[in-house]
Image (tube, rainbow, N blue to C red; front, top):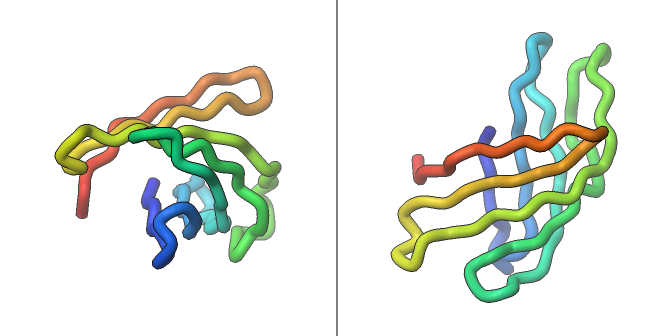
Length: 86
């Protein structure tokens, strides 16, 4: 997963890799301290066989901004990932 923030730092794109290729979606959110609560809204690109439903997720960052975590609940499953800068 790759998250790229826009200039406003509360929206951007998220890329998730599926077996058949990358899914790129736009997201927008609001900050609550060090937590971004966001929702995906528009599919930028995806492989033809991949189904994408909008999802809500949270990003939480450490005080120094060098690490973070991603959490999402979708279709009855809970997903988490540890984030690090590229």
